[in-house]
Image (cartoon, rainbow, N blue to C red):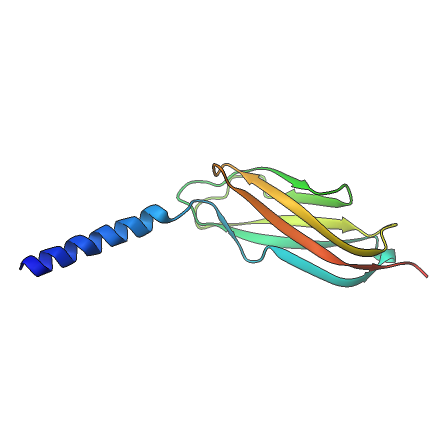
Length: 128
């Protein structure tokens, strides 16, 4: 009986520690997108980063900033409920930007002390 009690005690303790270690926030399906080789005459290319709120309270994106003016992010403005999905859309302007690029998008939320970083990259072929 004593062995069973100890086993149950440690099982409950281990389970509660695992739950306590779960960090609130968002999980991205991917954090990087490679556009590959694209033509300058396209004008702009866009990709979306999908995320899931794995916390226990609504997730609010407070702001999203890009590493340069050539990259324009837009994002889900309403709170994302636990277990639900949201998106961050990123548009990169190819006009007068031939060559390789590697840009970051920083996401700030209501999760304390947590910043998420997304990356887009590729190579723009100049107009002929």
